[in-house]
Amino acid sequence: MIIKTIKLQNFRIHEKYKLNCQKKTSLIVGENGCGKTSVLEAIYIMLQGKSFRAVDREIIQRGRKFYRIELEYQNGEKNIMVYDGVRKNFIIKDRKFVRLPKKNRYPVILFKPDDLNLIGASPVRRRDYFDKFFSQLDQNYNNSLLKYNKALKQRNELLKQDYIKKELIFSWDILLAQYGVDLILKRKKYITEINQLITKTYRSIANNQDEVEILYQNNYKETESDYLKKLEDSLEKDRFLGYTSFGIHRDNYEFIFNQVLADGSASRGEVRSLILALKFIEAEFLTKYLNKKPVILLDDVFSELDEVRQKCLVKNFKNNQVIITSVDEI
Image (cartoon, rainbow, N blue to C red; front, side, top):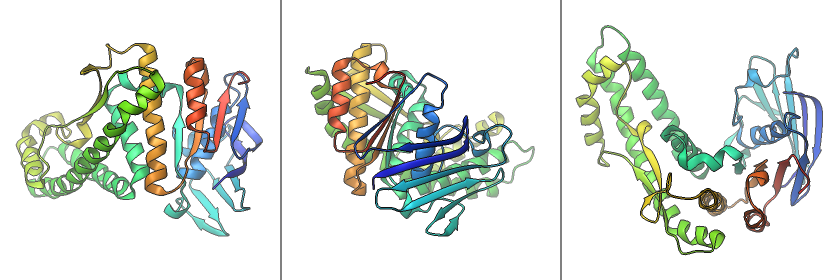
């Protein structure tokens, strides 16, 4: 699916805005603060069903009661989303949906300057990155993650109470173990597949013989019984803390560069090459698993890359529709 136009109304600083998209590459040029990222945000909402940076009530232009997005594809299909300050509705083929239907979601690669700091970011940030990546690849992963997080929230609320019935805690433990183990297996699968490609992809960018690996870190076996036991063993500690201290929500991903941690050992240029390699693999996986070429949204990343890496970025995404924001003409 190729985007033809995107129209915004009362969306952040845009009272009214229209972007005519090219089939290959579209460039949005403007000073910082002029709303370039907001256009990418609106496209992301229409393709994925939610914003990558805010909740709906924060998006409405100040003093307005609603915001509206209209996205038209090259084939003439139009999708509309309206948020009235309370709820949002997606209007697709004259039918209303409170959520964007799965069949109408389209894969997206979002690349923003902050992604270049992923290697040195917190475990939470890296975990969130890979969760979003794997959720696009696999709807079952996304479903398990949503159910796991719901069960985790319920367990944490119980842990804050003065008196806790163990049978109530145990019922949530069962769900955490079930969905947790499912997520562990999927994370290991996808990281293994990424590692089969990442060194080769990195070398094609950096033009050297360095070795790269992503290490998925957890501390449990891949069985529900083991997971349950660890939850039970940590119950008293969790009651004292008021939250669940064990589980896949505390997993970590580390980038390994020539057998040592990339954070602190890899140069700035090497880190940027590594992140580019990851983005290229992300696009390759989405195409492979979903049989769709993802739309590429590049939010002011050219200013963070040297000429060699800029050319590499353009070359690797030449077969995708790309929408770029920049403060300068490229």
